[in-house]
Amino acid sequence: MSANKLTVLKEIGQIANQRVTSLSYPKHRLGLICGGRGNLGDDAMLEAAERLFPNARLLPYIHPRQEGRLKLIGLSGSRYFDSVILGGGTLISSTWFDMVRTALQQGLGVWSLGTGVGSSGFDQPNHIDLSAWKPLLADFQRLGVRGPRSKDMLNAMGLANAEVVGDLALSLTQDHLTALADSPRFALNISVPVGQSYNEGEYIRLQELELVLPKLIHQGWQPVPVAMHPSDVEPIRQLLQRLSMERLPIPVLSSADDFFELVSPCSFTIAVRLHAAVLSCCVGVPPLMLGYRDKCLDFMESMHLEDWHIGLQTAQPSEISDKVLLLAQAGLPMRSQILNQAKLWKTSIRTYISDLVPLYV
Image 1 (cartoon, helix red, strand yellow):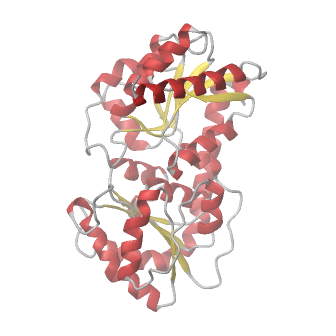
Image 2 (tube, rainbow, N blue to C red; image 1 turned 135 degrees about the horizontal axis):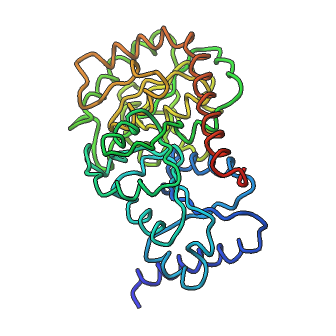
Image 3 (cartoon, one colour; image 1 turned 90 degrees about the vertical axis):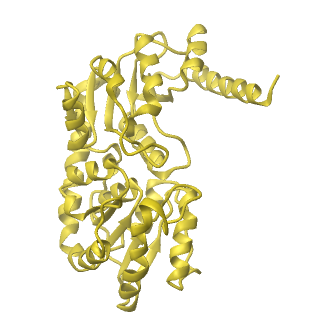
């Protein structure tokens, strides 16, 4: 037997054991389709989902072939799950189609929870064909999406049942602002596809940070590096090296609370990763979103922060520099407004859930 088959069987065995164990819990069982572990954005949304369903057992809904095998022994399908949630992240995209189709074919009710629509990230092109999703989404129990662009894309496909409920991670929004650090700080997240540099291709505009950040540092600002994924470390390291600050630690954060502790005393965030901006809003820290896919503007529009979004593929010369300097001046008055808007989405998500599945919350 090949090593790959042994790995698959081992994974199925682990999942089957987890699901057997869950049979003894006096809770509802919900399947959750979500992103992978090791990316703080995905991990934060998983954490958010678990907090939102204290009276349910959330279990990962996995590859269709494996779910088919598990169904044969009563550990998948409608005999096992109450329903399946299409979680946060930009999951109405090509990667997750087969999982959703399988869940519906198994007779499960499926609904989305602050899900984005379109290209999900570095490994997908800017524009993808979503036409095959239309009959699946028409069968959803409810279709709650992240932001207005996601809703508009579904409306353009002829789906009138989409509603904006906010990004799932906004349900982690804190109650109060944190006091700012004694010396001014800004959070810094840079990310590019693995094996690429921000000195080339569609991310070349990030070079402007090498010119503008020394101005802030000269004024007494302190950068706070934030890696949302291990692959963020290298581009952040390269930038810090060019700023003669290579000795600054670059923590790879593993929980939303770790992010909040590090970033909440900052005056603003410079973010390429979407959820570096989302989690900043959870603590009222104004983000400058250097968007690499439409999902970034989708979120920023939902927060009424579209003026603080710059598309990396369309950025004009000096646009990033100008916005960084402007946000350093304008960020303070924005903090309460951002936190309050995030709180509204937190309430929206909770209301959406309680209206749909009152037994689970």
